[in-house]
Length: 281
Image (cartoon, rainbow, N blue to C red; front, side, top):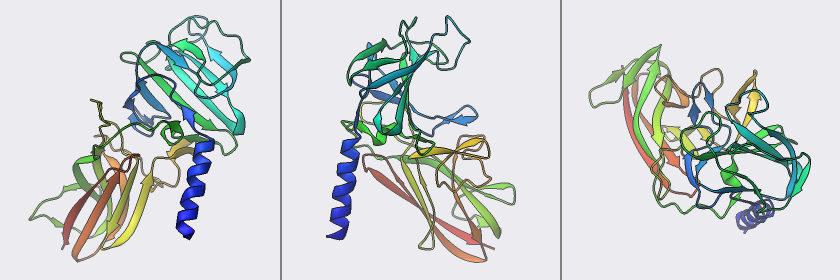
């Protein structure tokens, strides 16, 4: 009963802060935390067309018209301040933006047309959420309603270990050295009706039945002047390697046989798991 009540209260809290999708028939092209050049995507990119609407009532506090200012990777964009310390950002808008800030808008009001301004391929909207009270950039998928229909399990293409600055692939007859190992995996998810490889929501790494690390793409925070996933196993390790594989966590390898287990899930609750058997000399 205790856990049921906790779940009910969590659901009610989420419902109180639910936001509408800012475009109709949204198709995620790139999701929160996905590798974007040398940095992490701080929002979601959504393929659609037509008008962009306010995800919740609020006040337009800033807009950038790239025809009247410096170029921006987001092109024409605007920010809306909402109650509860939440701000939303809308990028790659069609210009010019003839908006006066501050301007009060209601949930569902058209605020712009989806465009191709800034650094983007095709028409897609960059949409981000900022919790100014907690100084965090929040994964918008957690608060957007209705949730996207999705029955496709996230998958893994391959995995490798980095031990003593050398890469090792998994195989039947591979003998691994002892030492500190870093586990990297190329993982992806495809939401229903989507053709784009996006990022799963959660990865959990176990070794010999013990949870070693948990990576949840719920928010980003500043750490040593860099944006990182909150409570991630990153430490001083980049979240992605040069090949785009995701750092899932690390563990110490000693002589003997070990069982490593990777659990991957998306926001809809679809999940996959992968087993790795390691023999250490």
